[in-house]
Length: 256
Image (cartoon, rainbow, N blue to C red):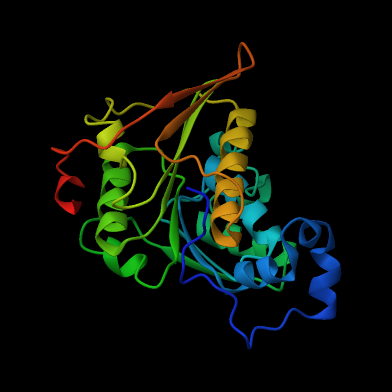
């Protein structure tokens, strides 16, 4: 499954300026000016402004994704700073969304950064992603992930899942109606906990998430669909597991 979504296409009126051609020169060599226009037209929602969100948001911003919405309702704490690289010591006590908006806007003023200081719940999740082309899962709990998974299925939005624990991480790309959804892969949520994590694990997983998003938007390469990629940082190994749709899945079983 290698094509990008049909409605993320370069509008004939979209113009890539001289400064943008220079800024994105190295990646335009890969997917051309047409691909850069697709990135400029894309609207991405990133759920979570923590470790994974820091990495995925940073790389999607510097890649030139046109509009990035970040959703979170936490404030920056000292214990965040070992992995949440967009938050600095001066940001302690500040809303994470405000910290993200400042850093991302400075990284690339060509990108429109929108932030929502809200907790994602059943009552607001549909409105949060209503005008998005895709969703990046940068959350730290399965309760919210399942909400995002369901709304992605309902609205036919690709869902880019990433998770981390210690030196380990996991990633998959979900295309509604075509691939296993998050509930197919993880029918039951793990018990809530304050889990251990090293920042470099977020860098690996968030970087792969951002790569998948770019590939999807510009329509190159093979996506991580129906595959769960597992990173073991202790032994420096990557394993891949095939996953399948569950016809009886409570979230996607009725999609046919």
